[in-house]
Amino acid sequence: MTPIRTITTTAVVGAGYMGGGIAQVLALHDYKVALADVDGEAAERSRARLVEQATVFESGGLLPEGAADTIRKNLAAASSIEEAVGLADYIAEAVPEEPGIKAATLRRISAAAPAGAIIGTNTSAIPIGELAQSVAGPERFLGVHWMNPAPFIPGVELISGPDTDTAVLGLVEELIGGLGKTPVRVSDTPGFVANRLQFALYKEAVQMVEDGIATAEQIDAVVGNTFGFRLALFGPFAIGDMAGLDVYESAYRTLEKAYGARFAAPQALVATVQNGNLGLKSGHGFLDIGAADKAALLAYRDNAYARLSQLRTELGQAPGL
Ligand SMILES: NC(=O)c1ccc[n+]([C@@H]2O[C@H](COP(=O)([O-])OP(=O)(O)OC[C@H]3O[C@@H](n4cnc5c(N)ncnc54)[C@H](O)[C@@H]3O)[C@@H](O)[C@H]2O)c1
Image 1 (tube, protein in one colour):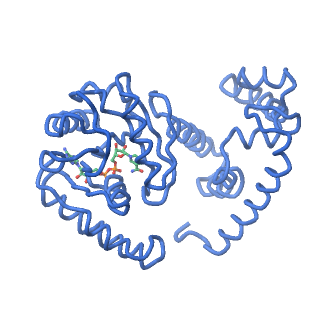
Image 2 (spheres, rainbow, N blue to C red; image 1 turned 90 degrees about the vertical axis):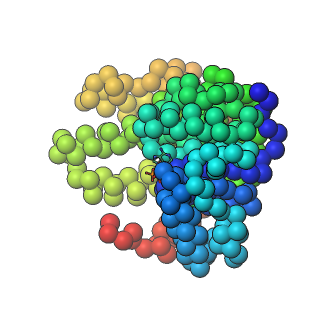
Image 3 (spheres, rainbow, N blue to C red; image 1 turned 90 degrees about the horizontal axis):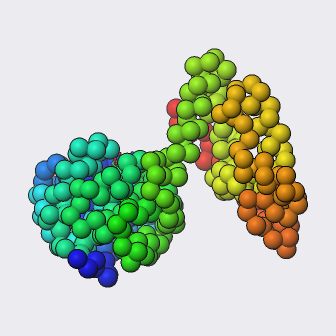
């Protein structure tokens, strides 16, 4: 089965929170999108909701002028999964994160879609290799993991399964880039990158509440105003290299004494420090930030943090928090 080479017509199966947002982004970029849900009525309710929401986004300046009309023109509700995918080049699957529902839906999609149509699942954590077992033609199947709310979060993880054709991965990478998003290829392991990290942090935060160390409100205040603030602009490795890896290593020593081996300094960090690579201050760390870029990076960082602070002041406190 040869996968298609260009994508013009799309379908979204499971038009809830995530599927709806994905459909809005595809439609805004002038792809035809057929929406499918549990039945035609649910798909039509979604279509109407998505157009109405796009109007609100446009009037609030969150989407460009004319966006709601473009989305209205390109979105259509289908009466069944089979009808939605019958002519699609690309199908986004966004049904609930329930392995049985995913498997049954992928079987229906792959039976009804054109032979070369590409199928991207939005699973949050289920390995692609596992889901691929329900897809006829697994070479055209991959993970395309958007974040909520899809119209506004830039990153999309792309995950190949064991059989995914590299041309399919390349084509979807182009599609996602063309939608104004930042695609990042990641390995097929449970939780991929984003959710493995996100859930590790969440677990530790809940543990601190359970242990009476801090309330949920206190933790959110600390995270949102300290390292979480930085994370809006940089990943953990850029932040670590800027902070100094020797500082990280000694902090882990203190944490290990208190909390045991799960907080021991990672071996690769110890080795990097032992080799004299302390991050930006010594020239090398986990990232290879050249000496020529050092001053510019720090100036960028300071400007970005100051501007982000201003933006947060303009936005004010989030309602209810
Ligand atoms: N909610 C998030 O923040 C988030 C973020 C990233 C990824 N995801 C993933 O996206 C997927 C969808 O999550 P969601 O939050 O949009 O869920 P949701 O419940 O909002 O939407 C799921 C939609 O699928 C429909 N559906 C249920 N069974 C179906 C079936 N058999 N056939 C067709 N449609 C069916 C539902 O009616 C609903 O409209 C999940 O895999 C989830 O893990 C969710």
